[in-house]
Length: 581
Image 1: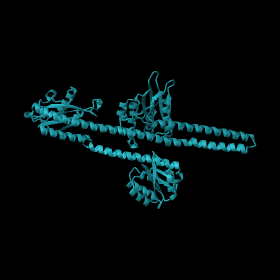
Image 2: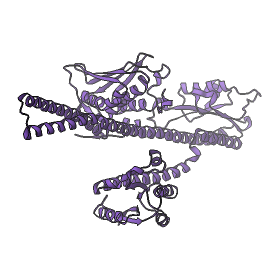
Image 3: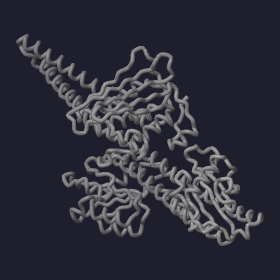
């Protein structure tokens, strides 16, 4: 039966004993733990040379030397599988390694022995096991990708396709005593020719512009594809023939119009050999090569599209996790104030109550003053606990929806308010205020995906923080939410009054990799992801209006009931969500 392999390296025998007792009682994914003990760096290295299937290593920092643990970490990262996760443990918290050291050795967790309760230790090991399993899966997937790439290595780039077609044309010319010109994109035909120096029977050079016009005319006249048509009808000599073709991202008839690339093959046989049979033989071979081109082209375009979609999916997931991590940090920091006040108020109440019960003042005025202080402390306690509760509630609702793909009924205004409430710590740092304006008398019940909508709103807020008010002392955000009478759509207007969007970028704002903040770490995918979510998943629309120095306005329209279109979601690269009845 499979067991989770844990290596414990520590020079204290009791640490091994207690860790063994803890793990002996635990299971993860129905499997037990196998603990292997080492009492020094040297002993651990000898074990690792013999055994390579460890999932987690628990390593003491200080053993033979103060740096023994870090030296062992260095050895593990240089010689052991990358899926082996490391937890540093120490009995001397003051010797905690710097953050750059933790990053350098890819250390997952730093745990003081005084904090290593059974529950804490098991929680840390379980998290490391998940990480180890994820890395192993990615490595296996990478090996599959390498194998797949090898299989398609001859059609992995447009350059490979050009080499393929040049060789094909050379073969056709040699076999059939012909001259050929291949153009794979008539929309840019001057840069899309594949040919040798072609001459007409008169000795004049064949004009590529003339060929390009003939190919365009063949497609405009909707001549049958993959058939030979006389060049005489298309402005060329009667000794030339044209085979028009088109290529799609996938060799399917349902491809989008803007994904179709049109081209053609122009050929001429030697006059003395240009019999009907010779023409048919050439056409048969040429059609086969064109079909191969189309398949290769479809493969390259498909790979490019899948790569873009995977990048968007990865970035969507990364941004969701990043926003949650940012919210966790902000909420934790923001909670310190109300909880600190509440704790102090509670202590004050305890002291005052104790005095009143055990040693009350003789002066009635002093008693009344203490009673007033007690009441004030109570109100402070209550107000700050309410404040903390509201913050926790907003964060809980928002983080739950961010991690969920369920379609549920919610109040669209509340979803946006939760986003703003949870982002307030980040807004507060930049002295940016945000207000939500809801039209009265409207029905805000929305059957949609609050997690995905919140990702769009948070992305807009983060962009405002980063770009709208980068150097300003403060700023403002207004969000107007309404549902016009009788309308089945919500209108969301997000407004900031900051720097605005560069006019050169504005028309392409929702395209992938378009950003003015590359120097600030921007990827140019945030708006593309937001557009994908709003349009492809939520079935709405999003647009932006902006003037430099006058801020930006985003107009979002969402249907009151989101209808999931499986084909559109798959085409968009978004994960199909679960639908809850």
